[in-house]
Length: 250
Length: 361
Image 1: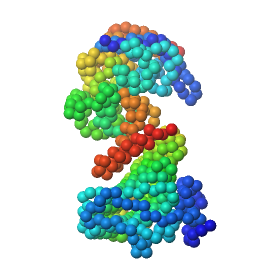
Image 2: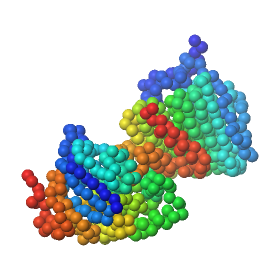
Image 3: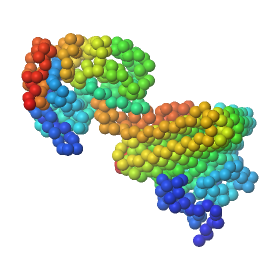
């Protein structure tokens, strides 16, 4: 059993015009096997939550704590957080020119597992996961995210998640820009990892659409830099019907 | 003061050809008031294959077979009484690479080398430069009809070295010249790979890899002279830079003369800035005097290895220094893989890793 505990997290974004407060005290606990949907309007700070847990240098932690199985995540470098078992599927994955997908995956897996995977089993492992995500074999030789379509980028994120086997995954608007078929394939990938490894998931989304494929155990409404309402899956149905209007304060 | 009599004026830095070069750091190689000795410092590192010879001859027996307007090249010609001549016999197909090496010490020196690739010969020549020297060098490469020659010149100098060179290839009918200029060491390195054609059907394929760190100046000035019909050229240079005052210059001049119908040329320069404080100049020039060509084009891009890339790779567990190495190796792989020599490839990548690890120290 793994636990990610976010306590009273306060975060500012560092800009040229000074620091701007975004997160105003976030409390959230995610355990293995649980899926938490974080839903909220644009600009409410959902992505800031995701990126500050992953350690993006743009964000300044001004208060609170993040613990993974009791270890202080905020003290760790970005790569140490990944090694500790955190994974962030990004909304806008970055292009890395000159680095092939196969080289990237192998380097990442070597770093996470602490040793290079055995070539014989590794090739098969990658092929299998790629096939299940409907990714063409030629994909391996392409440069990371370079010229990828929106759907390819998101499938590539889930491919990494399946291979890196994190304890807790944060999916930042993984549903954005996906057509129905791609959404289904990506969701199946997430469900497969959940079933195989008892993954804990923080699913950040604006829309309820993805919740038809990935069933949340808990739904948290995020507005103005903190969680303003919590409930079970039924809360998502309410949001579907009424939207975020009541949570947006002038 | 022992000044040489010369028609070539010492550059001041205002000339187009010298405006990027830090003249004060050239140890006087360019300066007509400074005496520099002619010296034979090149030697064969391994046993030469059958049909290949390396001899020292009198410069008088091997006068330059082209006109150079480079000041340093002309100073070398005036000074060097001897010339190293590498000859690859007609029809010789050397299965092993020909390894030449040169280690320069503290004295500035001028050196002339002539490479003669015989009719229908096929060979790979590697010239490895190491040491702390100050070298002015001319390599003249003559390809006889049908000859195929790969020339790999490695600038793996120590930090203080200065190297000014012209590598001029003359391609006759149906010959094929592939050049790899690899510059990773030295304080100032300025290589001018230049090409002319004497017959149709010839192909010059010019590659370059350079990696500049703190304070290094690495300059590559390519000039391809399409002076005959139906010749082809490709220029592909890639450079990475890291650290304060790291400076690279790439000049790609391609001249298609009137009457050079059927010319096919393309040149490309890509630069990767790994840190702030580094500067890459990239200047492609294409002059075309005939419209009857197959193709002519150029591309130049300079991009940054930015924090978002670093964050992305690190967020997958990859430590920052591994992430940088990954990106650099990937960037150069396209060219380095063409060496078809795993040892050389690894040697170069290891050197680049080492240079990178010292950035900012």
